[in-house]
Image (cartoon, rainbow, N blue to C red; front, side):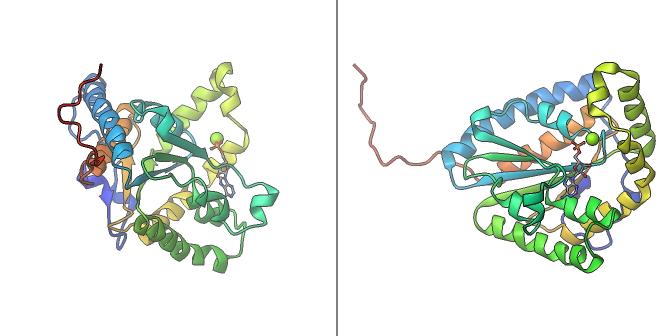
Length: 266
Ligand code: AMP
Ligand code: MG
């Protein structure tokens, strides 16, 4: 799974990443079986994260429309205890949000120690859609890469582990998924005609993602470029990356300071 990690953005090229990759796993059945094991492991690690109490974990999910951000939250994280998870969804900013700096609405959703925060879109929209549509002057969005790096370093220094995922789907796969929404009346609520206008800007978005990853991938807050054309593979890569991250933290059950030897409950 390491091949999908970007810990140093220098020279990063999206073209080097195949959205259809499957990591040599035979297919959906094998992939889902592996995911079930990882989900069970994640569940244990989540409890340990809570018991340990020294770290929070922030998971940022970004990707084009239909790339599966919601699906990944449901599937890759299904083993989590809901009391220790906070999901934040970032839509177009409200008037009040727009009257503040771009990080203002984001920071308060960062997870507490012991918790996992899942961001469905994030502060990265402020260098993605904002750049593609020129919603603020270029000098302003350009300065944001550094603000984002500093924000993420602040979180890291204060005990929050940051992991960012780009759900990389191909343009053809998006076409299939958007068409499926159009063809199914129970999916119309997920579809807006404006989604087709965004699709026309596909190349601009790819450029914006590439630069965002180049400028913000660091060893402390790496990006994972997730091959996402196959949903089972997308979930597997995300779950595996999170399990590896938590296993790397040296989490332990705290010493309560109470001697329980010989204690018998009557
Ligand atoms: P969806 O995820 O399909 O519900 O759509 C949410 C929409 O909100 C997407 O088109 C995002 O690009 C947009 N959005 C999210 N954050 C921002 C932002 N900071 N500025 C402008 N648009 C945003
Ligand atoms: Mg949408």
